[in-house]
Image (cartoon, rainbow, N blue to C red; front, side, top):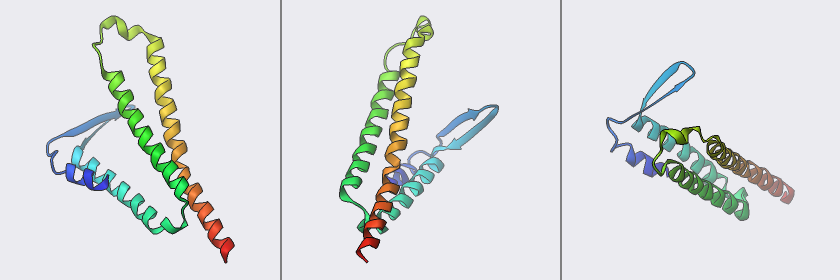
Length: 133
């Protein structure tokens, strides 16, 4: 993933992402975002690579499958939410908006919970290794 994002950063020269938080407006260029994400993924790959002997294969697969399923859920949910023609009278449909928000919360909580599998896996591997000594 890190390599893919790094390569993609060379193809988006003049694109930018802008967002605002409260009353501050931020503008970032897309290659910088790709570089930051690729460094982030590279860091975690290195941690996984150097601590691989301590980790349980079952928990590694649970973590990997959970991340893949969560990313697929984000992509499918985003496509479903953005698909279709919106009319002015549909914006007042609060039940649909509430459902979208609940699905988004469930996906976010699932992603956060899955991220705790790696530290649990690392601690269990360290405990197992120190019991052998």
